[in-house]
Every structure is written in structure tokens, then in C-alpha cells.
Length: 273
Image (cartoon, rainbow, N blue to C red; front, side, top):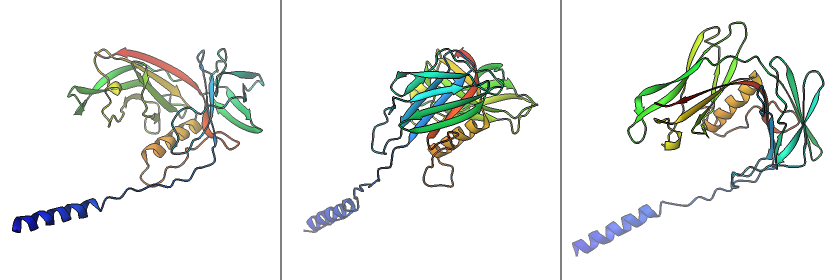
């Protein structure tokens, strides 16, 4: 009898624990879609592209929501206007337009009776001297192999304030981490900047392993573009002050989200030993 009572008590206790679990159905309100403009002009051939899309609701998929039918142009400071042609819905390109450092470029996007504009100076490029790998002394990859990061070496110009963005590719796969740097503490110095990234989900495709081809792009960007990506990074990762994410600081006028960047590109490639 005691065993029976004890067994019933355990069942009742277990039932009480399970009753504490409750499915919460978040009632997220749909928001009015906003236009998103992502424009890039570089000093290299084929580096002119504008993506035009609209935001989606939280419950929608992450597929690119490209918008066609827009008129997209880029003008230089000599009043030359260059049209961009839609290659895929929402992607507009001009394969022959390349930017020149020291010049300012004006983006104009007209769609559905709305006009979005942005202006950006292409700052002089800073040479990327070299790239090399360093081993993390405190952390390994999930399988126990050494975790490695790329270090970029360059000489920061002393005469100007400089802002940089770095993009890393491993075997052609773009690293999702936003990598930024400025010269607040390194003005006029030799810089060896370690491009660390957080692989918290232990995705092997993101690790740098022997035989992997690693490509680094170094971009000299405008301060407004730096602020956009800096705020985008804080919005994605949390800045410790706000519970809710906010839209990144855009340099697009007219009510759209996104950015327009006219920048130089330096590129280096290595094969991991």
C-alpha cells in the first residue's frame, strides 16, 4: 500500500511539473513593408550593383524580395549619368561603370512614384600589404583542430581619417560576421588587424582548415557607410542597452532602408597550410 501511495504521489508530482509548461503563441503584428536599397560602386570592373527589395514580416521566409520596374541611375560629380539595367528581378547593374577615388557619386532610384537618393564619396584606397594566419591559443574547432583567423597588415595613412570594412571568403563562402575597423587608435601606424569571427554554431564550413582557400577584401569606406554597418552589427548582436533591435543608420534619403557605398577594394588570397 505504501508503495502504491508513493507511486501515485510521484505521478501527481510529475503531472504538476508538466502542467507548468505552456506554449506561448507570439502575436507579432505585421508591419508595412519598406523599400530596401543596397547599392555598391567600386573602383573595379563589374563592381556596380544595386539591390532593390522590400522588407518582410517576421514569419515570412528569408528569400530575396526583389522589386522590378525601377529606374536606377548613378551620376558622378561631372554630371555624367549612368543607367543601371535589371539583370534579375530586383538586381540592377552596370558592368562597365567603375568609380574613381576622390569623386562623389549620386544614386537615384525611382519606383512606384517614390524616389530614393544617396550621395557617397569614394575615398582613396589604402594598400593591403599582406594577410597571414594566426592560431587561437585559447579555443579549438569543434573537432579539436586548431582554430585559425586571418590577420591583415596595412599602413594607415596619417593625413586622413580612415574607415575600413573587411569581407572574408572561405572556399568562396562569404563569412557572415561584419568586420569593421577605423584608425582612432592607429592613425599613421602599421596595423596588424586580426579578423576574428564567432562560430558559435560550430559550422565546419566557416572554419579555416588546411587546404582552404581564403580571400580577404579590404574596403576603404565612407564614414556614413561605416555607421550603417556598425549599427547593423549592433542591431544583430545587441548593444547591451536596448532589448529590441532597431533599424541600422541609413544614408539613403526618401524613406528607404539600406545604404549606398562608393569604395575602393583591395584583395588578397592565401591557401591555409
